Length: 53
Image (cartoon, rainbow, N blue to C red; front, top):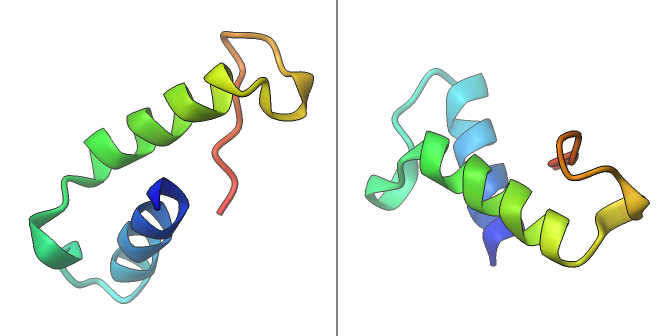
């Protein structure tokens, strides 16, 4: 779900539109980063976690 939220925010930014559903894109990307860190996404260090969309 967070991946889809992040993509929705990225897509809106690309199209120069507001984020859908009242999403705050800064909060979404930080939650995405936190969840990727929790699951050890690509075995990255805690201070360099990617949020690929």
